[in-house]
Image (cartoon, rainbow, N blue to C red; front, side, top):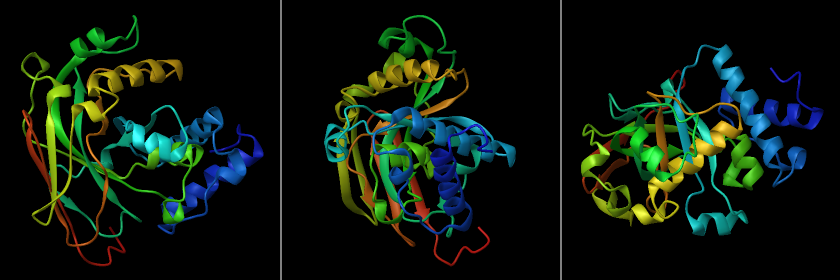
Length: 270
C-alpha cells in the first residue's frame, strides 16, 4: 500500500490507517510529513484511498474543506483542501449515524452538487462549473479526525482525508437554473435548538467558487471530477460537536431540510 512513499510518509499513512481500523485516535502526523508540505500530505491521502479501494470501497465524489477564512486563519493556511467521499459514508437513506463508526464527530451544513458533466477540460471557471452541475441538494457533513483531540495542522487534516467522516443528503434536488447558491441561508439545529447559521458567502465567497477551485485542483492532481460524482462544497457556518442521541436538522433556503440522528450504543460491530 505504501511501498512508493518515502519512509516518513509511509509511517504517516500507516499511523492513520491503524487509527481508522482500530477506531483509536492517533498522534498527529506532522512530525513525519511536516505541517505544511502539501504534496506530502496529499501523497499520504492517496495511499489511504488506495488502501480503502483495495478493501472494496467505492468512491462517489469529493469534499472540500477549509473554505471558511476563520478556519484558514486558525490553521495558518491560505487555501482550502479536499478529501474523498466513499459510498459507505452516506447515511442519507436511514438518516441514522451508527455508533462506533466515528471517533470525535462534528457536523456542518453545506450545499452539495451532483455533476452532470465532466470537469476535466477547459478553463474550469465559474460559468463552466455551473453548467456542469446537474442539481444542488442540502447536505450535512459529519467531519471526524483520526488524530486525537483534533490536534491538527494543514498537513495533518489533508493526510487524514481532509477529516472526512460521513454525510447525508436531503431529498430535494434543485437545478441551478432556479437556485443561486451564494444567496442561500442556512440554519442548523441540534435537539431543536439553533446551533449554527450562515449563508452561501461563507463558502469561499460562493459555493460555486469552491467547486471551481476543486475542479482545477483535482485536474492538477491527475484525477478530475466526473459526471455523476457528488461534491460537498464546504460549510455555510461553524461546525458543531455532536454525540450519541443528538438529532441534527439543517434548513437551507431553496433546498429544504436534511437531518440525521446519532444512534446510541457501543457500535462494536458497526
